[in-house]
Length: 329
Image (cartoon, rainbow, N blue to C red; front, side, top):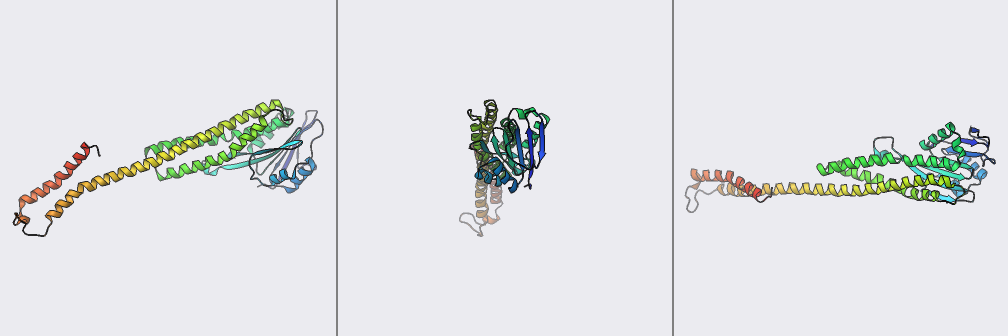
C-alpha cells in the first residue's frame, strides 16, 4: 500500500482547470467550482483533514482506513458514501486475480475518491478530464460514472478468459480427462465465487445510483448509471451461467472417470475369465500322479499332450468370440 498521494482538480466558474498536489486545506469548493480530490494510499492525517473539512461521518472515514469493505451505498445529509470494487488479472493465470477497492464521497459539487493502490480507472479518467475539462462541467456525478464504467468494463475480459478456459476444459473432459482438469475446475469455481461475492452486491449499489430523485445524481447522469447497472447484470448472468457449466463439467469429469474405471474393470474381468479355464487345464494336467483311473501312464501320453495344447489355444479364441457375440467387448 502506498504511503499517501493526494491530488486535487478544480474547475472554476470561468471554466479554467487547475490541478494541485498535496493542498494545504481540504474542504468543499467555493460556489460555482467543482472539485475532484483523489487520495491514493494510506494517510491518517489526510483522512482526518477530510473528516473535519468536509464534515464526513467518522464511520465512513473509519471504513476508508480498512480496505476490506463490502460494496455499498450510504446516504448522508449532503453527500453519498460509496464502496465499489473491481478486478484485474495482469498475468496469464487467473489465480493471480487482484481485487481493487474504491471509496468515494459524492456531493453536489465535489467528488472525493480514496483507494489503497493506483487504479487504472482513476488514472484514465483523471487524464481524460485534464485533456477535456468540459467533462467536469457535466458534474462530478458524471466523473464518478466514468470511473465506475471503467472499473466494471475491466471485469469483462476476466470473465471472457474464464469462459474460454471453460470451453477448452469441457473438450478435454469429454475426450480424455486428467487429474489436472479436476484441479482446474475447482480453481475456476473459486474465481467465479470471488467475482460473484463482489459483483452481485455492487449491482444493487449501482441500481440505487441509477434511480431518479437524488439531488447528488442528476437525471441525465442516472441514465448512464443505468447502463453500468445493465453491464453488471450481464456480468452476473455470465457468472451464473459459467457456474452451471462448471457444474456440468465436474459431472462430466466424474462420469468419464467412472466410465473409464468401469472399462478397466470390465477388461480385467474378461481377462480373468479367459485365464480361468486355462488355469484349470494346466492345474489338471500338472497333477503329480503316474496313473489315473482309466488312463494308465497318462503322463507319458502324446495324445493328451496334444489335447491340452489345443485346448489352451482354442479356449481363449472361443471365449473371446463368445464375448464379442454377446457385445461384452
